[in-house]
Amino acid sequence: MTRSFLLAAIIAVVVLVAPAAQVFSADAPKKNARILMVTQSAGFRHGSVTRKDGNLAPAERAMTDLGIASNLFRVDCTQDCAAITKEQLDTYDIMLFYTTLNLPFKDEVRDYLFTDWVKQKGHGFIGTHSAADTYHDYEPYWEMLGGTFNGHPWGANQKVTVTVHDQNHPVSKPWGAEFEITDEIYQFKHWQPEKVRVLMSLNMAKTQLKKPYMVPIAWVKNYGEGKVLHMSLGHREEVWTNEKYLQSLLGGIRWMMGLEPGDATPNPELSATLEAKGKADFDVAEAQNQK
Image (cartoon, rainbow, N blue to C red; front, side, top):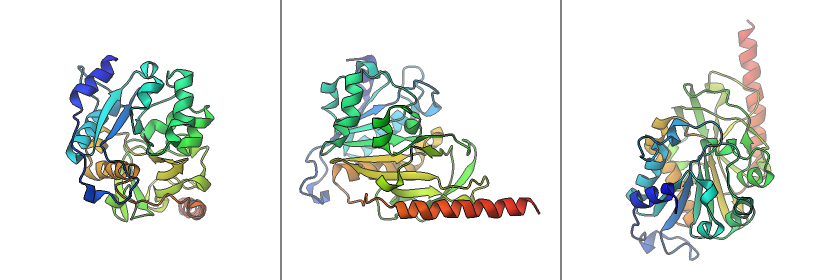
């Protein structure tokens, strides 16, 4: 076992199973979830996943504490993908990535993870922020995730407005109908609106920098018998102390565990509507700038 696995195993605490009354599905797990949080960076390393003085990074601490506080899951954290085996993967229920570029998984482990493991019943994959800036040229990854990083016009210090389109899904419910946040916002390529359910998107009309397209902020999808969530927020360290952000991730975990219902039906018509609205908002802004 690597030092990074040992460190997380010491800090992460195994907690009691959630009360049976919370389970809405007969197929829901009857045990706590085990989450493997991968925070290795093969490219740019964010402050949120930078370890200092041998301590867990801010995002790692936040997820470990969330597992303890919720009494639902435990988290092991690693920055050593090369040491992960297929056998180790099979001891986990959910993978959480805050990563960049091509991670040094063994090929057979990488292929198993994204073409088989995620699709298995009871498994889930959570991509936070720069998870979309990972494996740009490895199609099984972005096919699983739903899209990949294609620049960040809205930098880390810009305040943006986000619209919530599904206020019932446990991922997006904590945010209300709309909210403002200061964080770095990604735009995407390999985007597959016909395969995902967009829960939240950038409100271009209320955000200072305008672009003529839609920008999803959070989406979910069913993948085989597994479940996938991508949340592009999380660049700034303080986002990992934002209670609504943490409750949003917790909602995603509860959804993956079968403890809370959430619709993952693709809504490509919403993406099409938002795409047209983004162009219209951009045109209005351009016209005003030319006056």
